[in-house]
Image (cartoon, rainbow, N blue to C red; front, side, top):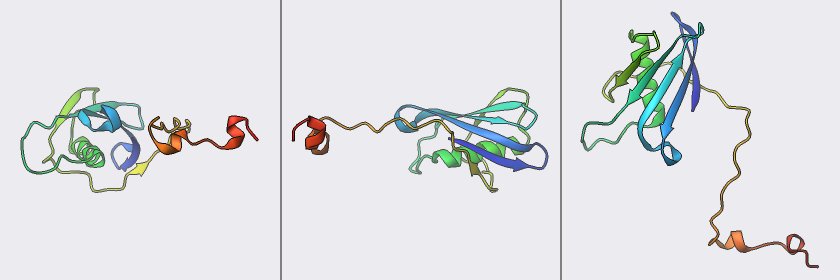
Length: 125
């Protein structure tokens, strides 16, 4: 997931979320923020607290990282750990779509629509 946001101090910044595991549900999650000048900072999220509250979603983790960045986190290429109770960024996030084509959808072989073929595809008339 890539986003941009605007800051009065740093200009337009680019945010990249690196989520591990299948579909991005695993921890840890890494958020890289790069300023317009090319300076970057990395934020890591580990859910260490056992609670009944749901884990924050990927966008909320991005907002918390931006909030920590704007609150004065070091912008010297260092790595900062963020917590879910930190104040999130309340401004506008603009999603950035990559021009690379998406991978084709995978179909499970046991599904009926995976086995069904049209007559033209089988070579019969």
